Image (cartoon, rainbow, N blue to C red; front, side):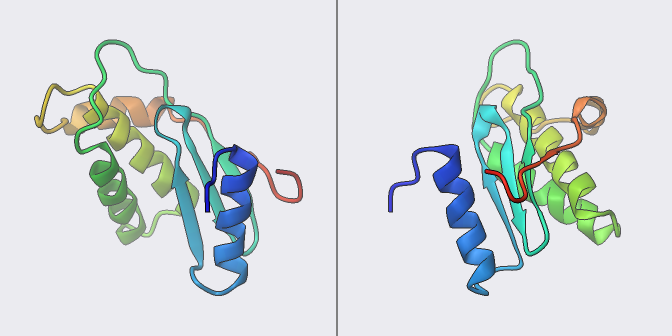
Length: 122
């Protein structure tokens, strides 16, 4: 089904969790941030502000890889998502298929804001 608005996207993510299809759903909104839904909370992550040219090549893969890295380190989910957003943003700043650097990810991670709560709202 079309999920045009953020409210529709959040509702679909919550449906997946409530129906037992997933424990966690993260909806990447690209340059607009992300929405996280779990059994307990729904949260909105603001995008990390970027300067310069932006390429989406590899950004989603970098995001997923960094979230997995954070979780494998035993980090909380929210911190891992913030790392993922930083890696995705760092990839967006690289030309073509170049790989982002750890330094770039760490700098952007420092700028990644804590999410705000959407639980009960939407």
